[in-house]
Image (cartoon, rainbow, N blue to C red; front, top):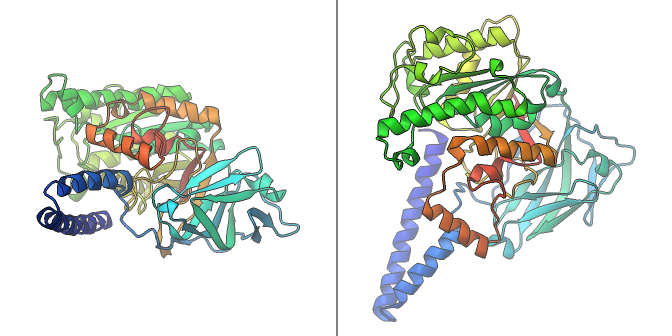
Length: 466
């Protein structure tokens, strides 16, 4: 059982226990107080749950994050005097370094109902980074882009619905400019490349986008048009295949450097388990990938027979690697992102790289987390604090890219072109967001209703050097 499944199992068990306790309280109130009281309490309880307790947070907000950065990472000395963060005399920072600041954050009583925020001010790039309600532990702020204002001694940190405690620790991680290298982005599904790396790939000197699956399942939106389940899945797959080839043109990536491999959603693990076996689509009634590969600008090994097998996937990836010869590959992080297709995508790339005469730099991304479905927390346009990590034995090497307001808007428009982010959310989710807006002070994204507009359109894109 994966860690994600273990966390979900524990969360559901605790929720069942809580419901049984609440039911007992309602029964007692109905018998001993008034018959109508349980109805009122049930409605109020449901509203409170949706407004304040519906986040999928599978750890305690009091848990300390536990990061381990590469040895010999520079640690410039800093001190927090009042609300001003100061470097020691004579310390200089590289402008484009990835800056990470560890400090303890403790929510106020209001911070149990409204999202605690650390506000960064003092320069031309103010920022807000949001943490869990009820937070009381070690957290890691992302100060990337604040090097100059910090060097001038003008950076101020102010907690909103929280207090900043203890002596901060700063790390300054330096990287080459990956935008000046040949970049290949591996997307398990159409939109993963844009969610994780639009800012990076839109600025790179040369970009390749490789999408592994058609993402054809869960096509209920298209069934509402009167299509059967199979017809809806095929239409959705064709649309997402088109998205994977066409949307990168918005960023200046030519069609000749985009490939859609057409394998089937949530079937990569089954393919990996039996590498020579054909593994068809769960919903589209297909065992041939070629329906979704028709827009590719060149042929690949898998086009010969269209068999959806792990061996064909590896052959396709190896052919693309040899054709593009990327210097940087951007792909799902092997431990931070638990989506099964994302895990298999990363493992497939590593297998395809074996034996090649050159080995590119690998940058991992996380579009999904094990234990916090809301991360990155906070609003569209805000900064991205480091995600929850509780294993200090696992060394992590963050790399942060800054996006201007114009680049964020372009990223939002690219996401808006993706068909999978266009349908309306279910009524229950929309009602929950309304209650959270009214009672918990949360706001949606101006760019779209889908949650990924809030999560992905930010001033930072965060990667991890593998």
